[in-house]
Length: 320
Ligand SMILES: [Zn+2]
Image (cartoon, rainbow, N blue to C red; front, side, top):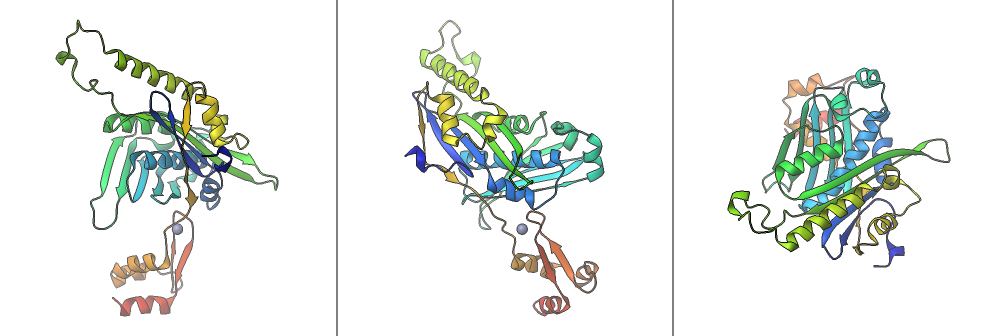
């Protein structure tokens, strides 16, 4: 496609390195991730980490090609108890975090490591493909000092494919004195090379490795090396277009850039969904939620408040 037609932000840009055929994706998020963070007033370490998580979730959701809602979630016993990012097949992104404000402030760091921020915990990926199908879940211990390392650990454990992953997020000063968040992720993937899965015992050690296998290894190493040469600043640079970055990294190898997946920020909460939850509560439990005769339910993702006054609640009960 014509490079000029490619939007520069809120996209996942797939590319393929020729002639090795290795696949890559560049996630570039501008307004979508900014809107997610602007709905909350998270301290910098929480905001940066959530922005990175949203970018990783976008990269993986598209790489794994599931239909439905893809969710990345970390639960820990540290200052941040919970962090969630989810992506729908249509490219709708959202995310939130639950944390202890005092404990996060006490860290006194702009970029605390994952263990400092989350303590010990788990990283889980779920795919919800609708009510008629089974929910897929993969869960691993939280291992790694950055989110990219933790996601990488998961991919290694799940053995779906080999991956290289680099992620960054940063806030840029806007003209009006506020800040705008941006996030980027670069991911390379390949299926385990054929023959490599076989055990070493099965192979005659006198036979040299197949030349094509060696070439594939070499291509993979070079692609990873080039990916790691992209700086964090380049991943989020508003003045460096997504396709220009891919071109800059892989032009010498030969690279094909495909039509991007467009991403947006959108929350799926609705008054109806909240009503359904409230309707399922026993009346006395519903009463305990009342403040001044009404129930207020805040969506943790988008911070929208859904308010039910006494007549709304009475109407819910009649449909009990
Ligand atoms: Zn919402």
